[in-house]
Picture 1 (tube, protein in one colour):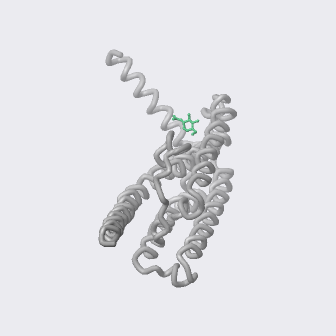
Picture 2: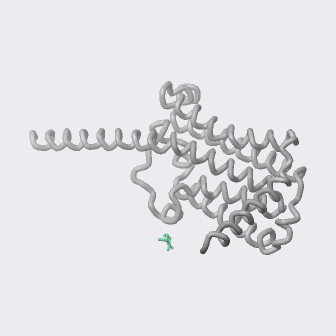
Picture 3: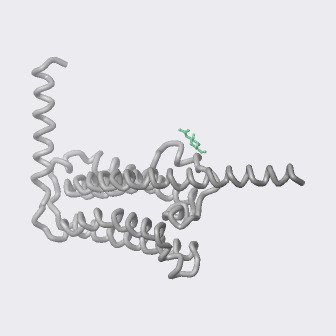
Length: 227
Ligand SMILES: *[C@@H]1O[C@H](CO)[C@@H](O)[C@H](O)[C@H]1NC(C)=O
């Protein structure tokens, strides 16, 4: 690609971006609220989960780690439903893009495919991990016996987050709303920020478990020898 061609491409992408951005109404409070809601959820569950890890306040409140985790799971799940509801309502009030509508393949089919694929990732990962594996059980000391590596974890590092992001994008495209595309970008970045906190923490928790298991194995070995 020579320079004028590249320049033309950049101008084209820039035009598309501006065309889409012109159809995002940032003055609508319900859209701003939905963006805040999107940002709030991962912040909320990271703060609560860390507080649980440090103080065990949910375990104490509910009498057991498992019940505490189920309560958090129910809360996060409900917040997710509420956020999706707020998002859809906000999208309905946003301008529809003539540019997006001029690509019916995108709005009618790609959108549905993204939404379906996103849901497959989310639901299959919930199925593979179970309730406590999905909803931060490790912060309660409820650890998985071994790393889940089967589907969907063999095609995606973070199927919950990637799937959820694709569902937002699919919904936005389906309605032909650029506001949905921009909200999906926010979802994507919020989940990346969440992972930035969660991944090292989970790594630490499992490293502690591995060290403890090793110690116990060594101990039972010496005990066996002494007998
Ligand atoms: C992932 O695992 C599923 C089921 O175990 C399998 O059917 C699929 O081919 C795997 N995909 C990849 C890319 O390994």
